[in-house]
Length: 232
Image (cartoon, rainbow, N blue to C red; front, side):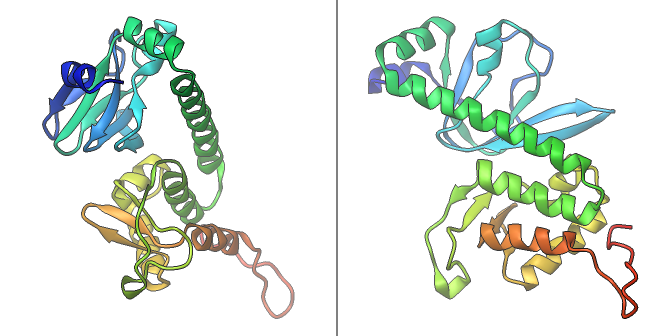
C-alpha cells in the first residue's frame, strides 16, 4: 500500500471511541496502525472480551466479506490510528498483491483457531485453570513480542505483552474476579507473568502452559484416594 493511499484512508480514534457496534451493518474494515482496539460481545447482559488488537491486526473484515451484521463491538482503548478500507479497495489489494491475500487467510485461520480454543477453555471444569488458559490464549494469539531483558525477568522464552487486565480475562472465562486475582498473584510469584501498564506481560508462555498442565494433574492423599481439585 502506498503512503499516499494510507494517508487518505487513515483515521484517528480517541480512547473509548467506538469504531462499530455489534449488530449494525458493516461496509468497511480496519487495519490497526497504532494503538489498540478492544473487541467485545454482549452475552447474558455482560460485555465479554474477545480480543484486544494492536498494530498490524485487522478487524471488521467479516461484515464486508459475507454481508452480515457486525458480530461484535470494537472500541479504541488508547489513542489509535486505523486504515479504513472499503470492499472495493480490499478487493483491489487482494487481486494485485498475493502476499496480502495470504496474510488475510492466515489471520482468519488464526482467529478461528483462537475461537475454538476459547470454547475449550469455557468447557474446562476448573476455574483456576480457565483463568490461566484464557491468559495463554491471549498471549499466543494477540500478544505483542517484547525484547529479552534478563535484568527484569524477561529471559528464556519470548516474552509478550497482552493488553488485557486480569479482571477482563475473568469475565471472558466466567470466573469470579477474586479467583483470577489469586491466580495472577501466584504466577507473578513464580515469575511467569506480571501486570504492566494496564495489561499483562507473560515472561514465558511455555511455562504458563506447563503450569496449566500441572493444575490438571490429579492429586491423591497418602492412601491413594483422590483429592478434590482446587476448583472444586
